[in-house]
Length: 569
Ligand code: ADP
Ligand code: MG
Image (cartoon, rainbow, N blue to C red):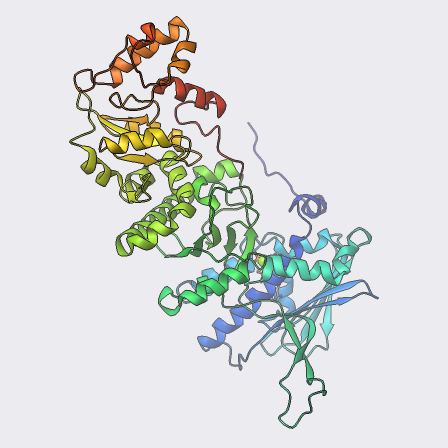
């Protein structure tokens, strides 16, 4: 048997990188700004530990379009590179200088927020550029270097007369990618990917209106001045400590995240953990009501303040994808498929951490201010109910604070409900019979009758309530939900002979058996004969099981716990 090395030559790999490295051409800008940010953060770190003896000042990154020359410039005032370093970091494809830096300054640099790690980001420039130039001057006292490469594996490197520290990347934008020379397109990309990056990013200038001098006349225009147009907020709320933020800060950050959302969020959850994984973020509960189709503003995923995606499927449990906000974690592998993601140990931990934090927050809200929690209930119940159906761990926690509204507009927890009805709403097997209405107006007569008997009637009208009922019936012992008009509460509720007479013999028979199961003949005086004779009053319009069958058919079935009727998100 012979063994050997597969010989990969740069000539072969280069066009591959160019074509397939990233499916999305637009991310080249994110990658180059990430490198510029890393270069700036590295400099910050080296000055802070005294290794770079310079004034750090307040460096910025600048993006410039030169339409005439068809060039895009990314300029930073960071660490820069010597000619040797260009050879080392740029000419070696897939060698990550970011990783090397983190390795070298291990302990001190772990919180620097350095982004890069694959050593491929720089080459994404060739997805949009025919030719790329680097003009760079290191913070070390060495001459600047000028590197030019036209996308073939040959490059040139020379000295350059640049005197300011930092790096300028010049992209000669190709014919097919001229969109990246348009101001609006670049602005759009900057807002999408770099809005919260840690170093200020300048894109052109803007006119700022100044206050009028005191002696100005009414008709005098207010003075203006040109200022840098900084497109990002380098210190977004989620990077701060919860203790340093007020309610108003959370709200204004929400507006920053979703400028087109005019409705205020109901409340937020600040995520902040650094062991066994790193994750920060803020989740907001929006006012959802029953309307789930307007889900355009979604949770955004960041890594070290760089936007990655707003598709958090597989990372955040599905029922929480209805929330809004940001999560930022360097520990989520993103170069893998979604199905692989779900199997990743870290991601699983992250997902259950988020679930737990949400449950804990809801629980503390319920405990600290029940009245307020009740007021928010209608807007948050859809998330909670869906969560109870889909995540067992969440069910266990939520069972303590989930509210069941009654027809009298009050709210009961399951425990409170149980306590209230345990002595008067049981059947012969000691099973608790929970009565509920789904529509107060339509079932008005039945509700009144049940109330007169002293029974408690819940008002369950949420879209997934039939699933929730099944879930409760199977996870709790000895309870049964019965719709108020499906039950025969004594002989008092208005009879509906018509419905019964329409039933086939078979249906009557099964209704009879079903009734015998649900209704304690000892406690109630049921007149099942009514079905045959029509002689005496009878109050069951439809047996519970038939109604549920019908409901399941209408909602597309979906099995016991199927989510067949969940709205698209
Ligand atoms: P990564 O960022 O994953 O390390 P890249 O391919 O994006 O990989 O960049 C390769 C290396 O080139 C960086 O690690 C860094 O050492 C160097 N580099 C790239 N851009 C700059 C820059 N603007 N300033 C200084 N060094 C840079
Ligand atoms: Mg990089």
